Length: 114
Length: 114
Image (cartoon, rainbow over all chains, first blue to last red; front, side):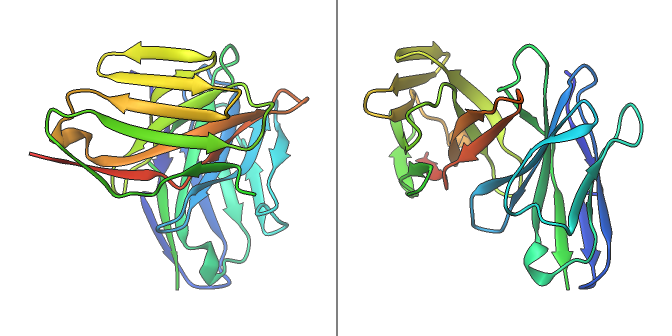
């Protein structure tokens, strides 16, 4: 069964450093999303992406964040200058063009900012 | 006002019993509702979707929706220890762009006691 994959599974970085989290969505899906979950808190929407551009973004997704689809398979989230409060699980999700509201999540990347 | 509210639990039921999980939402225009299961340290796994008022059954799971009361529930029959997890209620928001994002509740932690 096709699934969303994410790398790395765990990323440790120093405050102020840039990180890039990578995702490979399900191959026939056209809508891509990033969510985050701070430990013990709810899953929060960050951004949705379609047709090579951002469709929607939350207030969390400020200028420190960017997304890109550098090729036909990868979808990345970049955090330009990490802060302690960026420590969280980051989940990528994707949905197909016929059932866009049904999102399938990847296993997540645990980001630890020291 | 929180978008999606759930009783955080924990909810403990004996093996073989029915577990009942509840969720309310604030956006009366919401059309799509989902239940995800999240094991500790893992990503959300879609288990049910529901769009119309009434019940929807899938194996041991039954989702119930009442749009007038803005209420969604999940019943798990014949609960098994492997059902022990956090259950996340999610409500979809559809934008004019065609993008979707999910608003999640904080989740209800379920423990099934052997």
